[in-house]
Image 1 (cartoon, helix red, strand yellow):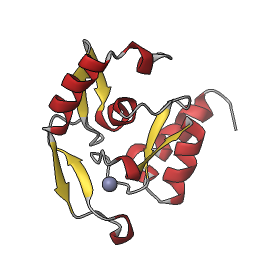
Image 2 (cartoon, protein in one colour):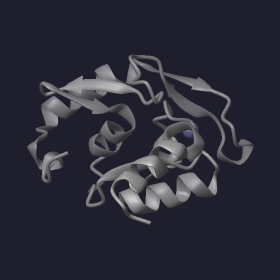
Image 3 (cartoon, protein in one colour):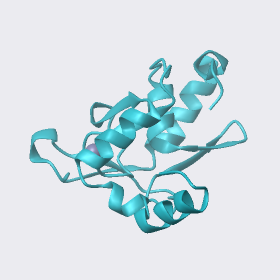
Length: 131
Ligand SMILES: [Zn+2]
């Protein structure tokens, strides 16, 4: 996502986008009782379960758009979940992360098995002669 995206959202656009955005969210009990309810995306999802939201002729991930709408400076390129519920868009369940931090968090929680096919990765690495 390009830098400076927050600045390109005018306040009127932001209001209209936010209205459309929040109409697609419902409350569901989360995986982690300490975190409370998840705010789950009811609109389209990608194959990994992340909410998809289209605005300004751009298809974005819903859990990323929510941080942008809140004016969070996404200097780090990814938005990661504390609750491990991909369609969740509750701001307190999200944090900005680098791809490396996101991967470390995902592996610590054992979630990488869903998104990473290790045998395939190792086979590709062997083909390239990297160990
Ligand atoms: Zn959540």
